[in-house]
Image (cartoon, rainbow, N blue to C red; front, side):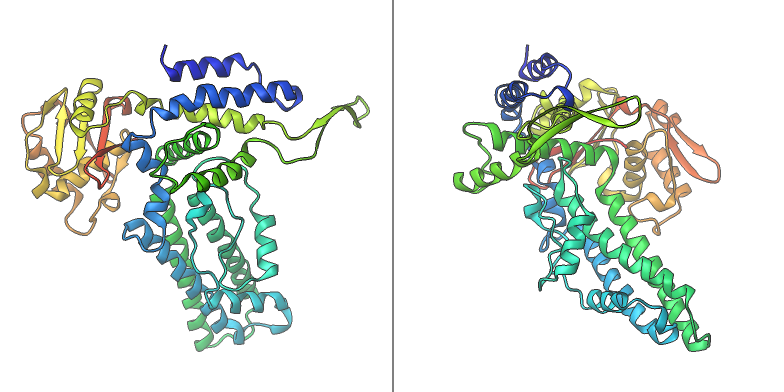
Length: 442
């Protein structure tokens, strides 16, 4: 039996994990399971490039200084937040001042100055900082944000904390703009122009946030990243000698990070009181115990993370081995790595995919969203040519593979759809380091 199956068996042996039955003895057994069963699984994954790249995805794609499409989207959102606040300032002369709370004027002025040094903080990886990353400390907003974002969920906290910051600032601006539209005092050409510009700023911000969410929160991608991050941190926290040179620089740093992360696994110091509802609607305390015990909800998340990494647990790490493995497991394999390749039922589909990027973009989009309609706007360069002409050229590229061609259906008036179950598709994409990553289909 391999280590992954042993870990699943060990989790089942723990029995039901509920707050009502979590005792010191059971909490000790849970932590022993993390150390003796989960860590050996992760130890087999820490050198796998797919596992590494997904663990570090947010830090390597969203942080300041990286040149990625995702970072550009972060900067677009950042810019839109500031422009929204600046335009709110321009609208202040045209509303009833007496009906504007003083705090709103302060908030507008504050956000218009772009008070944060970034929206992304790589150190959130280990423990969410609950910080707005302000250049100068602001007690009001710092405390408001700490109350606003109380999230003990495991996973990709670099990404989640970024979106929490964006939502915090956006909610403030949306609330104020909604008020401004209700209390317009001066209705002339100039005021209409300023409020029209305000509407444009709102629309641009909504659109930029939506684009960032599409890039970062694709359901299967995000779930897989969450699993990789969670298991990496469990390994860092519970292994006797964690080998994670690609994640932490030295052993002293690893020790500090592990102590931080363990706070997510066990509850803070205090006392847990177990209550039982009485027939009259009141509650009676039935027992109390120390709170420094494993959190059952968190342990269930860790077990779920083991389920999500099953696809890469026994997958070859070399590009050649990974391609051979993919072709042996499924019908359609697309490899987005120079040179681009397509395999159908284990056989290569010969075409010059690298010189026809529009064809590849459509085929990749279809394979990445099987059973769903792909339209013009979903292509990597939607303005280059019509999806209809691209489909015609793709059909020629798939010449000799008639069965695959027939699976691409025309959804009249909407686009095209690949009628193939996702279990019959594997997408492999370059990791930028000479290796390949498995890309979950949507």
